[in-house]
Length: 149
Image (tube, rainbow, N blue to C red; front, side, top):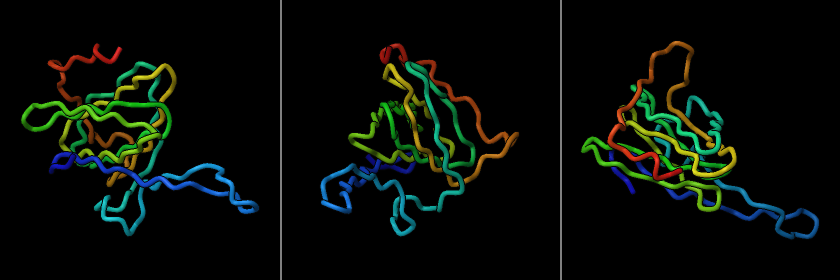
């Protein structure tokens, strides 16, 4: 899924192996490399966002900041409202990792659909500063958030 307001990029997953006997001891997911052509502007801020069970963060709009999301624990649904007032619902979890880009000026909300805390790694092209007035509330009054309960 790709347009000028947001895009979704499937992330690479690689098994990791023990150094002594090469058994699989885990996995790594590539979120961003400086030579990938996914994140156009190098991130100026990276943070971990937690969302409590059944909670919604947003909807809000970043006036200047383009933001990239990937769920690293639990599961979220990112709801994005495009300029045609159409909603896009994108599920993200660590088992099928995605990098979801929301461009500046595009309203979005994060919904935790699980019974435990979900953790979202966020990359942003502009670093947050206290009192920067960079974010405003979005209007999703016609969206049915209750369907995720």
